[in-house]
Image 1 (cartoon, rainbow, N blue to C red):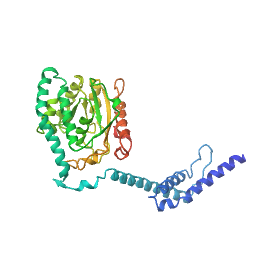
Image 2: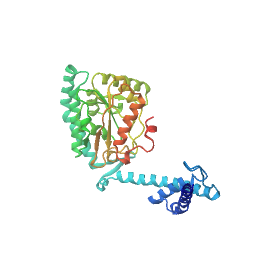
Image 3: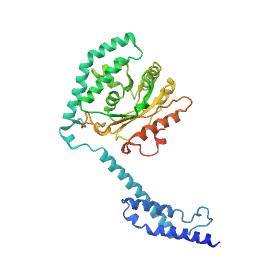
Image 4: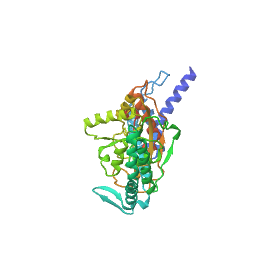
Length: 365
């Protein structure tokens, strides 16, 4: 009786107070407390005229209540906008390059390049490739006779080349989750995020395992570097050619079944802003067809050092972390379940400024 009436009256007073106490939330929505108040006012406003939960009564829904509810909704939208602006500022800070990166920077056909870092990178990559060309050729001849299906010895020389190119720039990525790496003789499908041309150098230079890449056909045509990748048995694809895509699918499945691990960038191309994009199902289907595990990888903080708009590294990469996540056996699982697990792992391992914006389930469709 009386106790219930007091409780209902208190609830009504609290709701009314929320509507009138948060007016400043709409005057300064950029302030975090105001954003919060706008959300609370909106939540209070939308229940005006609706039954209160479990009490069987409702607040009056007059014109003033509707007006406050509409204003609260507008305030909440502005609150969302201010949070998005804050995220943009955070991302800008995270992707800010050191001051010295402006030295020797210039444009080449609309692409950004750094003269000092470009020279270090090219000298390292090409120089080590020239030095290692004789060993690669000898390793290829040896592999053709004794290990034609896997060519592991060629993979090791290619990894040494990638490590040398990173060393030339004084670039030392950190590896986390080493315990999640598969056995040296176990074939798996590695699926990392893709933000930079340096991804290949980073993975090959710091992960102590042999693997092949599914990469653009153009990369395999680069003199010396592309030739070495062809000798190691890496797989090329023409992204806009459906016949090439089908051939790549068959070659990748065969490569996995022959005991090779494969790296596939499930986003299909490099991210244009460093954030994780949606995944294609192709890599999941290939791994399931071959009957191998999938190992998600998060490459953190690499985008800004050589984004897709740059033809050379713009500064010496720092604080780059490669995170290896626990693998998943696709047996007995659907494509959607495996895709969701892989995407969640990659996205969850990235720093906030690289994570996907929005629903992860939507992104992995």
